[in-house]
Length: 474
Image (cartoon, rainbow, N blue to C red):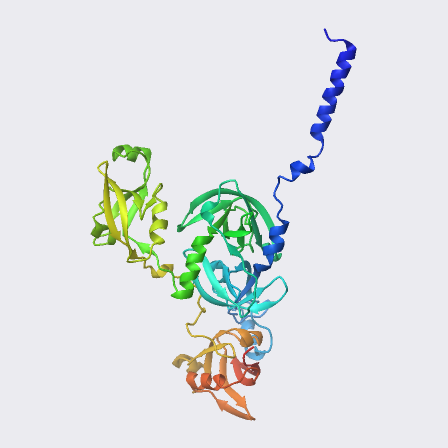
């Protein structure tokens, strides 16, 4: 039986141990946690903020009046809508992130960040701002390459996402909700994730906090190497819920290289429909395990058919890569350049067979969603205008045999609040007013303008007209 004195000693020892367990961890223990400060200081300058604007087409309207209201027509006729008075809805604006991959101004971002953008503005950490142009974009992978006119820029080191381990620390830098250069960290949750309608990208899943505005920003490993581009989140609220997805950087770099060299992305195809191999199907097809991609249909005279692939075959290796799940095959095939001959291993009737397939090229015009100028395929001129000859109906409505219709505005024209549908009647120069009669004549006059030189236009909108002065090259 323990004495009271011994009990007191034991109680004091227990109390001391309990108190120690509640004390903060030692400096040595804390040192085992990652410190991201050096990484951010060294590489943060190569991360950029991207803002875009999409000009909207304003409808003729007046506050408080519906177009069906008789008073609407009264105001339309007797209160002319002049180009000099703000009439259009504000531009739609979006925010995103990107990172510099070459010192002469090439920047990677997401295709959805710059899709349909009229203007793209890139802001660096030193507060410099540059207008960017889209070199190319690939909607399938959600990768875009843009360019700014600058040299001597900091750039990031590209890492190998294949060496990433699940549970490894990773860091994101971006502009969530427009808050420049926000840093968040987490771990790799999974690799090779397939998302709905995203068959060509083996996403890296993380629990790094990603929100709107982070799109296009880099994902770093602890060495400061870029291993991915933050692209998507899974959310039921529109905000971060612990599931973020990044495009592996090797995929993004391959896409940007093709965009730079040939202007589009070439993907392989073999012409098969596939499905997952379940345990029951593995038993039915006498397979050793439930791996591979089961061929449910073969395109007649397609690459696979010409190589001897048959319905019911299970593809387990393609181009010396293992096909563990059916989702692996589209990514492996797409990464191979069309025309390449590759070895294929299939199981047929439970027996392995070796075939050779010449990869074809994926062609699907509906997948080509690269950013294009909306409403017109023709580029704008120095004034930021795209114009067209009016139709016969428009001429009758205007009761004139001259003038040009504005199709698209950006730059100087957008800042002067010209709108799609405006009617440019004449050019005023040297005190003379010259009627406009053809698009080539107008573009020729504008092309001869020097940067900074002004040109005045007579513009009609509705029943009113106004003179608008634009400066070339702005």
